[in-house]
Each structure stands twice: as structure tokens, then as C-alpha cells.
Length: 416
Length: 112
Image (cartoon, rainbow over all chains, first blue to last red; front, top):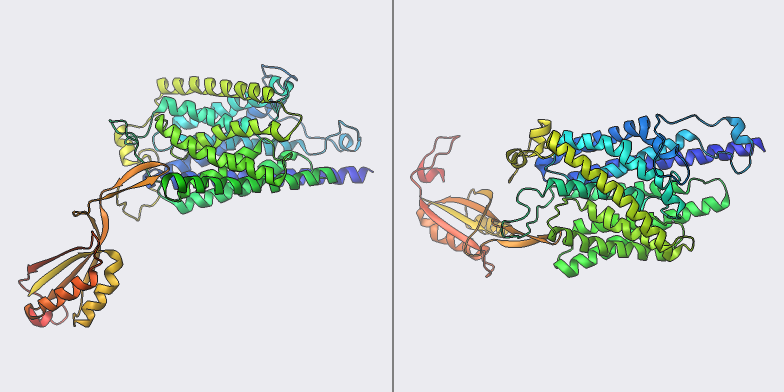
């Protein structure tokens, strides 16, 4: 019996760690997607942001974030302050059996959670690309990953008040994706649009991305990483029910992404008369975000339809945000925010345990906290160090201004 | 001697090169260029927002010829590059004072 318990524990831990590694790889996906959708003069800087924010997220979550999120009182509002990540399980506790026996390593839980924080922070970097100061962004990353995300994380997955009202968000359409988008929206509002994006007469000008092969690669990497993001969130693999649930989650995750691509591509073709690749890519990600709140309950066909709605929403949202003069070079606020809301609202359609009331209150709570806290931090950063590069630096490109190097120094750009 | 500078549609380059070879032209210089004529630029959509393409991609073909062959070469270029649609391009003819073949030092008509 002990051997059986230990083997299950080992299997669940192993599965958890592999899923965490897949989610870690999403950092590469975000890096490539963002590098592809900005202009070449801002490539090295966006890559610097992506690698640095990942390291900052891992460090701050290790120091304080994980403790804030998972060591506080059930049903509460204010988290306990503390540091580091606690003790590992003993073999005796695992083999003791019963409902309270741990079935995966505490370290694997930390590992899985920490890569989620990095995902939420990655969402911000794309929205504020091409004009924000590198070090202001990194300063924000410290606060976001140490405090802002862990507090709303405590309210939800950590067992706080939003969890207590019955909010259901399986892998984080709201908790991770909408939270990241709320922080990004606050940043975009304080920062303003890229120079040249909107004409004096109110016209909207497109600023095409420099490298669509990279953007496509990034999307496929994110698609792959999402199997860990959603699949790992089942938390268990070592019995028939859990194994089937994980398989269902992966099938549904894939189906939703496919539905999102098809819907966005067709809508773009009908609306803009051209098959806009960047919209198809955003559509795939929208399908993934949409299914993340409830990937285990729907049938595969139902998941595909949830993805289809996500794909349609994201195209409309990108055009709408542009009209509102909210400049988001990669569409992060639409993909993760607008579609994240749809994902949370779709849960009660297929899961009888969830209610629309709890979903709406939960999302309002997460959004209000992350948006207001982020807004305050952005405004403080603006007052203290400034968050925007100078007009000249923006024209020359933040690669040279912030990093002193170009991403492609051997090729002369045909236009700045 | 004359220098012919033809601005043509990029997809017509192979046809023009073949027509020139058939007319005994020994060498040409080709450059990828951008510009606008009466066709002007055009607009494209990216993520639902318009952007203007002011300069269209063209190919510039430069050929040096003896006066005796000028008309036949011009005819060859014009018929090969003609698609009948706006944006087919233009041909400029300018006098050429001298030509030197670097390897042999030949000058003038012998070097063309």
C-alpha cells in the first residue's frame, strides 16, 4: 500500500513538473510573438524585457509572492505577510493516506505556480511595447509579481473571499490572463499611444510588425505550452478519473485554439477583405484563453465553439480598442482581457457548479484590484522616474536607446 | 551611344531580360527600386487599420547600346514589359559620353 501511495505521489509530481516546464516555455512564446509584432528597431529591448521579467517574476514570487498567495486564511481579504515557500512533504505524511495526505511535492506546486506569474507579467510587456522605459517596466514587474498578482491569487486559488463565493476559474482565464490584461490596460492608459499611431485628425494608422514568422512561431509555442497550463491545472494524474480529465482538458484546449484561428481568420477575411495573419494568430490565442477557465467540463465540440466565440471577440475587440485610441501593439488586452472575461462567463454554460453571479463578482474583484493597484504603481513610477522614452529615442528605436544594440545590426532597415 | 534606363514591373524582369538577350544585348544592370508615378501608392489593411504604401516596388534595368541598335532594343523592352495596366513603368534614354571595359581598357563602341 505504501509503495502504491509513493508511486502515485511520484507520478503526480512528475506530471506536475512536466506541465510546469511546458508553461515555462510559454515565456519563449510570448518573447517571439512580441518580437514579431513590434518594429525591428524595438526588438532587442522587447526581448530584454521578456527575459528579465521572467527572472524577476521567479525571484519575487519565491521571496514573497507564493507565501502571500497560499499561506493566508480561508475566505479572507488581507493576506498574511511572510517569505519563501515553506517545507516539503515528508514520506510519512504521504503514506499516511486519507483525504489530507499530500499527493504531489510542495516544490512542484511552487514550480507550477511560479511560471504562471511569469505568464501574467508577460501579457503586460506586449501592450506597452515600443515606447516604455525598460527600467520603469522592470520596476513594475517587481511589484506586480511580488504583491499585485499574489493578492488576487490568494483571493481565488489561495482560498480567499472570491473562492468562498464559488468563483470557478480552472486554469486562470480571469486569475492569470484578465489580471495581466488589467495591469496592461492601466499601463497603456498612463503611457499613451506610440508616436505616429494616431493622426492629428483622429485617423488610425497601422504600424505593421517586423517579423511575422517569429510571431507565428511564438503562437505555436504558446499553443504547445498551453497544454501544460491547462493540463497541469487538473493537479492529479494517478487514477482513471484524473487521467481521463487531463486528456479531456488537452483535447478541449486544442479544439478551442483551432476554433479561434478559424473564426478570426474568416472574420478578418470578410471584414478587411484580406486574410490577416496576425488576427489568425490572435484568434488562436483567444481560443486558448477562452477555454482556460473551464477546459474539463465541455465536450470537445463545445470547447471548439467557446474558442470560436473567443476568436470572433478578439478581432472585434482589437478594432474597437484601436478606435478608442488604446494602442496595444500585440493585442494583449483584447486576447487576454476581453476574451478572459468571456472565458469566465462561459464556465456556467457547461459546468453546473458555477454561477454567473459568482463569476461576475469574482472577475469584478480581480479586475478592480489589479487595475487600481497597477494604475497607482504606474502613476508613482511616472512621477518618480518617468515611464516613457523621449520622442527622439522612440523614433530611433528603444533598442539603441535602452540596450545600446540592434537586433539585426548587419541589415540596414529600409524605414525607421 | 545611349544609356537606356527602364523602370518596369518586377514580375516582367525575366521577359525583359530574355527579349534583350534575343536582341544581342551583352549585359544589363538591374536594381530593385521603389517609387511612384501616375499610379501613385495604394492602401493596405493591417489588423483592421489602414496604412498607405507610398512607394511601390519596381525594377530598374540599365542598358548601354550603340545608336544603331537603340530602336530595336527600345522596342524589345517596351513590348516585353507591357502588361497594358497602369504602373507598367517608363523608359529613359540619355546620351552616353564614353564606356570603358576595365579588363582590356577598350573604349567607346568596342566596350559596349
